Image 1 (tube, rainbow, N blue to C red):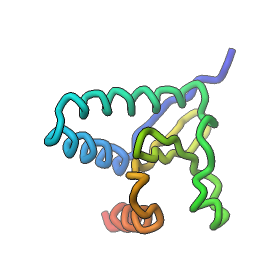
Image 2 (cartoon, rainbow, N blue to C red):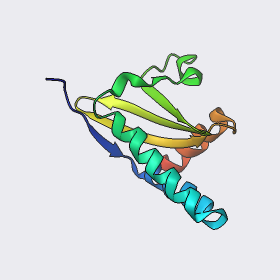
Image 3 (cartoon, rainbow, N blue to C red):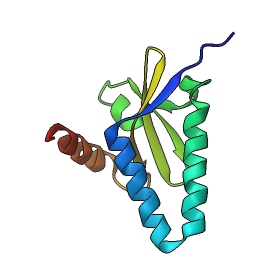
Amino acid sequence: MAKKYRTIFSRLAEEDLIELIDYHYSVNPEFSQKLLLTMESRVDELKDLPERGWIVPELEKQNIVDFRELIEGNYRIVYAIQEKNVVIHTIIDARRNFADLIIRKLMRLHSR
C-alpha cells in the first residue's frame, strides 16, 4: 500500500491563497470559485504523489533542493516534503519575478 501524506498549508501559503481568491473574486466570482477548487485539487494530488512536482529551478541554482513546485495556470505552488507531510509554503504568480517575491515573502515571515 502506498504511503499517504498529509498536506499542510503554512500561514504564508494560506495568506497567498486568500489574497489570490479575493483578488479574482472582485473581478469574476465564478472564476475565483473554480480557481480555489482547482488549487485544492492540485494540492490534494500531493497526498499520493508528493514528488510529482519538480525542484524549484531558481532555488536549485543556489543548491537549495528541498523545495518543489507544481504549476497551475499562472501560479507556482511551492512546497516541501517533510516526513509524512507535504507543507505548502507559498503560492506565487509565475508571471512575476520569483526571486524578488520569495525574498519579500521570507522577510515578511521572519519579521513576525
